[in-house]
Length: 251
Image (cartoon, rainbow, N blue to C red; front, side, top):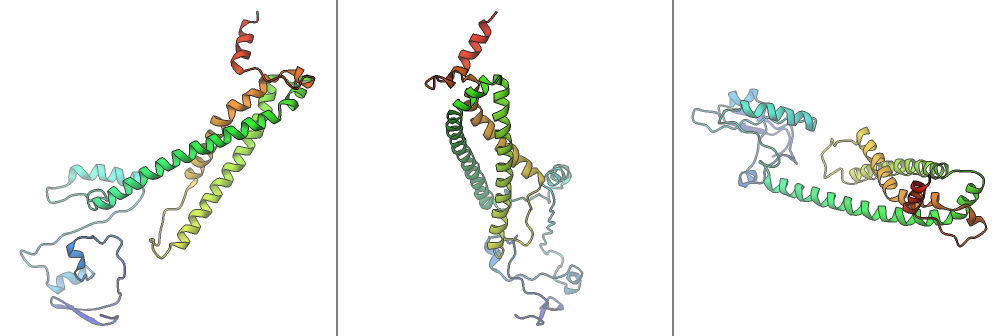
């Protein structure tokens, strides 16, 4: 079968105008191996292939936002008659749905592991950073800086660093996704969902949350650096709990 050939379907002679090489929604059952013809609905009555007793299936496909589709499904489900049903990837293709569920669980677990590893690395780097700034912090204490001002100073530096690094990570992730889609564009649909602004906000929020969650405890050690460390370098910062207890006991 080639382009511009004539194909007779029932009582209607049709001209082949396109050859379909790939069907994204093609089922993987036994009937999918048989030849398929896609014709206009207006030519169906003229072909005369639908007769009394014929078994015909009508399928409507809907696409759109995930929330909008969920609301439409919830509205449509009670209005269906016994001969109608809603098919999604879970009911129509259970093997594909289970594979996607396993992939989602794997990606979720991988994300948690990567987050923990990144958090441990941030905590170790911040601890080393705070230890290197014990002497500078003691000098600032001698110049009149309070513990709160010292914590604010270093916290502001980490905040700027977190924003820059999180923004760079979001940009790198977008470029990696774009490059992967360009590399596999022959195997993927023509239209794919683009990352929106909400994904960038989630990325920035996640990066800052991981940074503060793992960097703040080592950073708080700087507020316990005694001013006397300028003269006696062997003095270590007081633990935060001890500082709170001393402050609580003061009259």
